[in-house]
Length: 183
Image 1 (cartoon, rainbow, N blue to C red):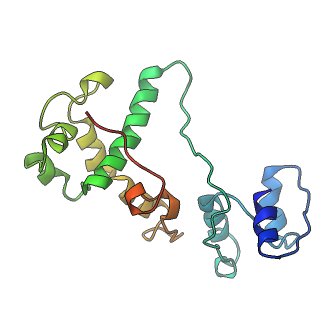
Image 2: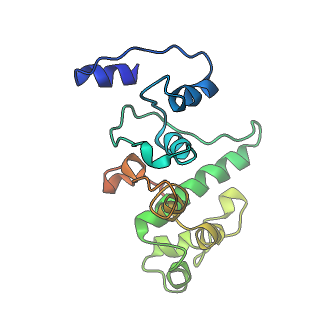
């Protein structure tokens, strides 16, 4: 539906090819049965990069729809749900505050604010509610980096896919992501 609306709004005529199974969509596109293939940006980027001739595919920058993407965890482990959510929030908060894997040691040793000191475990209190050590967020950032670092390695400019951040940028940078408040 989003593709139909997008193309119609630009006066582009199309013929829908009905495909029953998701796994057959890529095959239809790569075999030439379809001229266009729409999916989440990372899915399309990875599929194109794995094709016989990746340079013959163009990822259009247009966003056809904003759809929420979520993590999935096993039902019944509420503490793990909290840890997963707060870990994502920690990576976003670190990006917002300019904390990276490269400078997290210095930020912990000399926090520029009380909030950052508490966030990184220099001041006690942030881990208790999750049943984690106070330096849990520091450990996450030290080992994997902030959200931007992970994105750039996985999908962005440091990856084979070279995807721009677009909507996955922080709110302050024109995206839709924002961190939870660490208080």
